[in-house]
Image 1 (cartoon, rainbow, N blue to C red):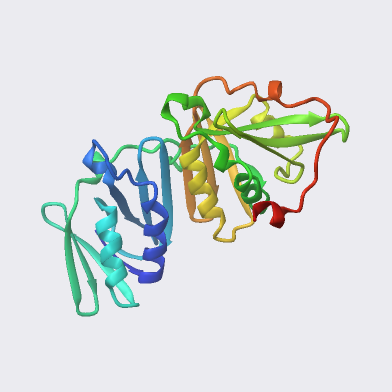
Image 2 (tube, rainbow, N blue to C red):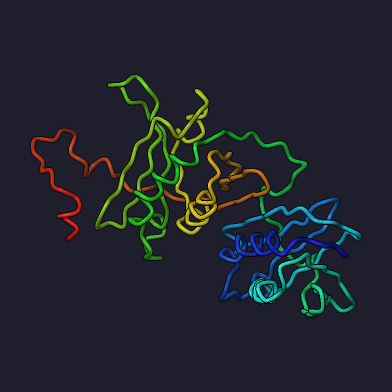
Length: 279
């Protein structure tokens, strides 16, 4: 494998995949990023077997190939290189040589064949996606993610519940996110998250999306992309946008009956100034 890529693109790609890499992995290869050069692109992939990410970068590919290397080590090296194009070339014994001007680094990796397959990353498979509003999703995640449980004993609460339902008062379908740690509950509805009239059917049965995967989605949407695309394949939630693919293994089980603790009618309430209340 031999290719050249700009430092700026490589740095962005590595920063994207770094948060998914398993830091305390029982499988050493899960601490690695998969580099695959093909045609005019370099793909960087990482997974912890629950969340997977793939970032596509423009590259000048002289020889196709693939290798896996420690994601953190590669990121540290690229950060120290001069702001120019960087050359990568595989050598014997799964070694990757990195060159930029007068700087030369070598890092030992593991064969690409040992890297686990990430579900949904098969580009040959035709999967239907729906378009969603990125800005609206960011706002909804900001209002719910904090309430998701971090207690592994409450596994079914370690995520955010996605569902669609009908608002009879407005005669419209509404997209809802719910999160709770059994002490607090956050719920937010939106009529703007879904674009297609039939897309609400994807979440009609309700799904539990893991907190870690949604943190990555929130981080990626903060790059400023307005829309993104979503699909459900088996037990996986798949997300894609230009040059980026994210997969999350859905949490199995029945979500808490949150409706039971929400009053059907509000007989009283208070209104306070936000800044004064936070002070």
